[in-house]
Amino acid sequence: MNLELKNKNALVCGSTQGIGKATALLLAEEGANVTLLARNKEKLQSVLKELSNNGNQNHNYLIADFSKPNELKQVLEKSELQFHVLINNTGGPAGGPIFNAKIEEFESAFTQHLKCNHILVQAIVPFMKTQKFGRIVNVISTSVKQPLDGLGVSNTIRGAVASWSKTLANELGEFGITVNNVLPGATGTERLNEIIKNKANKTGNSIEEVSKNMMNASPAKRFAKPEEIANAIVFLTSDKASFINGINVPVDGGRTKSL
Image (cartoon, rainbow, N blue to C red; front, top):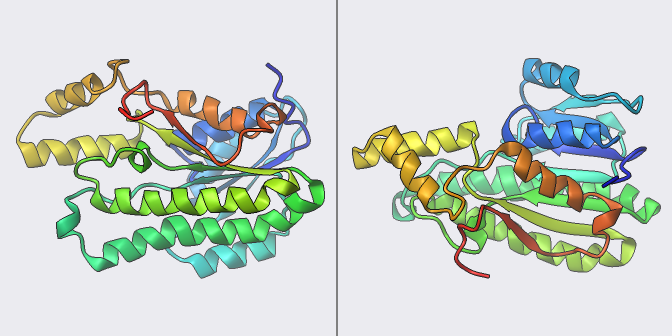
């Protein structure tokens, strides 16, 4: 399927590894001009070299730390870049029971996820409106449908982002802008490795045992590849998905029990 992303400008957050990187690579393959956004300059430069240029695209990168929202705002203002596509993607908060979570953990996660998402949207949507085309995809978690044990802060903040996103979709739909959430299940990333190690330390089980139990929670009996999540994200950025708006799309091999 030709997703017709040539001449579309896409900003991909958290694009130096995992799902963000896989999404950036696929968007470039589909012809988009990709701007990477993360905090590590060396990693950004490395990924930039991997982006396909089969359509003579202009790829770029921006450096910002999502723990510093004012810095992000300044970076966007200075760049003067304009985007048709925004992929909001940020690493999740540390795990642990919600009762033990410190207030500062909620504040930090809220800043990195919801505040920074909102800053990005406010900076980018005006251009989308002039084009009568915009695609905003938020990479969050299946926890918005079914809270996950041991991820108290993440469950809370991800739910807030999902509600923010649905509200935004209702407001922007008339301008040809869609806002959707992709909900990855357990995916082979550094984030998953951290979760597995934490569970192993807390339970006394081996990393292999924890991994196997997590795989068995999905009917697919395996972890997703980042590329499999990217496939869903990139489809939602295209014209082919023009009437899909305001939804949560689990990409989890069937793990989530709710419909």
